[in-house]
Image (tube, rainbow, N blue to C red; front, side, top):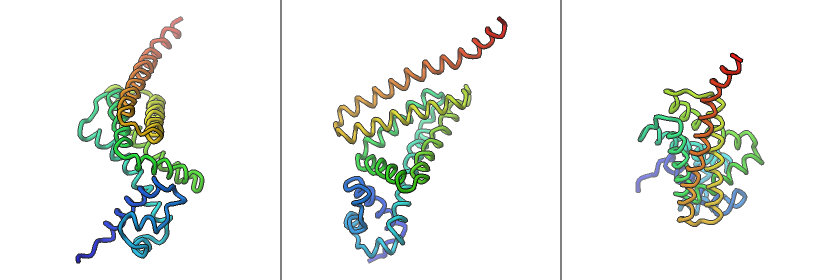
Length: 214
């Protein structure tokens, strides 16, 4: 039988850890459960990782990378050309990611909360990396019609709030038809808010100019 590369084993253990964390929480994510989920033995877990903390570090990286990939796919496959278009597409893609796997959603929230409690900087880092990738995508989409950096920050915050709120609701109720409808509602809320915010930003220079003349 061909020997499975360590890199592949690690990926299998990461996938298994996501499932176990989603089901049993961080405290219940023992190496035994992770090994069983991966159809491996505990010795294999210890061969691939020096400790459970090291495994969780890779799970964190997997979660961070997943968010970046969701954003990058939007940029590459169907590049948005305006800020509103980018915001709507990315928000929907993140919600689709949550919708595609309740266990991934549960594990993500569990990991971030656990890291915030145990290792504050690491929990913040996961969220910061996702927000940085989001800001970059929004900035690039608005390059032809630049907006203040503060507005990009506001849009990223609103998008994170909407997507995370969707994730919590999806985890709580698990009703697929309702979740689909809520995706549309969230995108409509984002569109309405952003339309009004962009109008205010556009009107501000003209208002300042009139005030200066007066």
